[in-house]
Image 1 (spheres, one colour):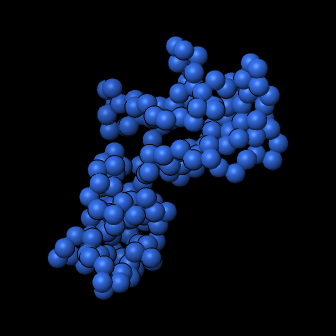
Image 2 (tube, rainbow, N blue to C red):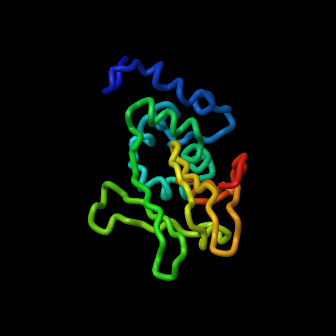
Length: 169
């Protein structure tokens, strides 16, 4: 059987090998539906609603936050591109915004809880890879360049410390 992108169902399901074979003791993702059908349905929920999916159950949260989920969405042409902006606010502090392309009017949303150590830095580099945003290096008026790297996980809505740069920048 083929999906809309012309790939066979067997190919598209291979992106979630860990989620395709559940223990018989685990509850179904959606009661009454086989998990591969539930996954097929859930993967089509727009990314802006993923925080709500995280609240349904621990199992849904684990699914939506997994790398396999994002691979499945990408392999089935369901991944959505978002635009991020790194700015300095009125109090001269670093802030980060994301534009939800589905809400062009007032679609900029501030990403909360930026790591406090990088709020006053200048020259911070940033890069988006998959579902993660990385803030790299930078310096302040009274501090030297740093090798610190912070990672924002869009599916978890959290910041974490990542592996440091090999050279402070």
